[in-house]
Image (cartoon, rainbow over all chains, first blue to last red; front, side, top):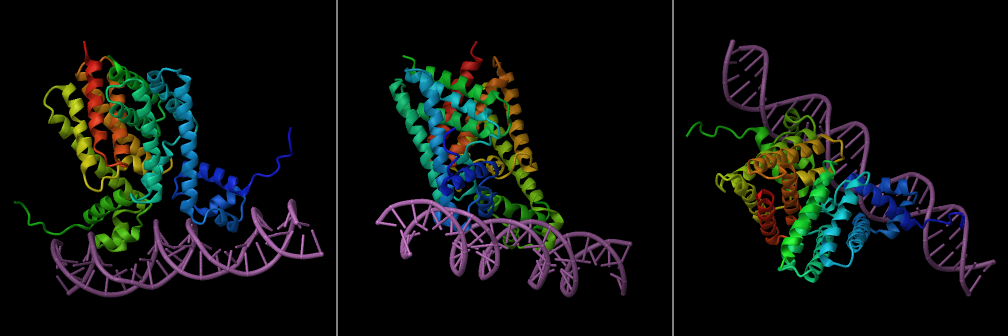
Length: 192
Length: 192
DNA sequence: ACGCTAGCAGACAGATCTGTCTACTCACAA
DNA sequence: TTGTGAGTAGACAGATCTGTCTGCTAGCGT
């Protein structure tokens, strides 16, 4: 045992609580008061760290981005050094995510669904998806794909489709089918 | 010409208004008062037709289901009599949808994102997705796919992915890539 | 000892949202 | 003519939600 659980800083508590609540109930479905109550923080403290609810939402999305990108990269890396194998291996992250309890789809897609097109939240979602796609494009390029950007785009479709539909029926065949389709498409696109 | 368009019935006006507003701003983003005001209906009338907001949402989703299924079937039929070609042709509906102005993704996915897992709205979404998938499974079967349910599942992933990500960046290459991938997968699965 | 910063506790204002309820109008059919 | 059904107009209750503001406490460096 180390120190007697010193102190969890207020900002961190808020963010952790918001992460769980936003994801589980949707952004509009969770009020500031509830976040305040469940994170055990004073209202003034909350508004010192996050001047408006949207600021908290953005911080939440950043945390989601960090987590999801990490899982994607890890899964890809676990597939070994071959870029083509990494493209397919990334889909293991999808399977893991869908299997997790309380899984409710892609937090970014959900957030974008609740917010108008020009909003900061919508833009952040776009940036996230773009980052994933450009990472996949890089891998596809290394793998020698005929058209890396098309392959990457196609793979993001499978990924997003798996994220979206896996949220509905919990049946595990969605990520399996996604992975298999990815393998076929990667093989087809890199065949020489 | 039949009857001279007698009167615009209240229920219909409500539904039309709700369709536009819910889709554009999200379900939680539109209040009853606004629907009342924009459809030019009295509050009592509204609550006579729809005892609760959720009832209106359900009616809205039914209308969406009708429209989207219709477009899917039409696009498939336009591809001719060959079931394999129909599976690919269905993706033209995706392209048309993404190209439409004010396109904001799949109304069902968006609705599910705003509502908890056990809700009637969530269930309705599930039923819709299930209906699409079983229709695709039938086509895949007719097309002689080795495993019709896996092919259908894979195609729904591409479809949902296109619906979800097409909502973010308006770039038209998503539906194009989806269609191309569908063609490749259908060809691969039905090859003998 | 002093002041600064971080935090806690909670009242409060103002807006908004769902749903109820009363009262009136109009068309139409018995 | 009289009743019924559908609709209009809008006040109202009660909840909830965001954001502000006032006080108080406690650690910490100087």
